[in-house]
Length: 154
View 1 (cartoon, rainbow, N blue to C red):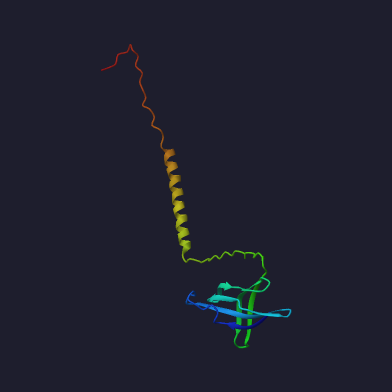
View 2: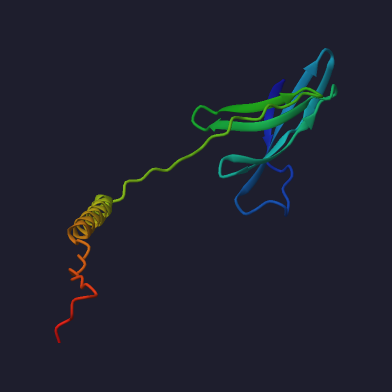
């Protein structure tokens, strides 16, 4: 396979957004005496491939343009291609979790307030228990038993 040139005219139309750029790579494929030119096209949005149209080789292999690097100072271009054999199963890439951790100023004051509130609740519960223990049940008044024979003074 030999890279010949970029094709900026391929697949330009109304389906692309304002920042989308369709770029094709003209690739010369030689196998034995047969020579074929294929044109895989990728749509780039802010440097990332948003969609890709593969070129189909004679043996059924798909050829996709995955990326490129054009160095204007050295005039050297690097093209990244992906070849997929017919019937091949693509392995899914590993999932990545992105977590953003930030430090909030004065968050320690919120935690300090929480600790003070919990300490206040604990003190209130302890004092209430002490007050309940200090209160004694009222003692019944002493009764004077009167015999039936005795007379009750008036």
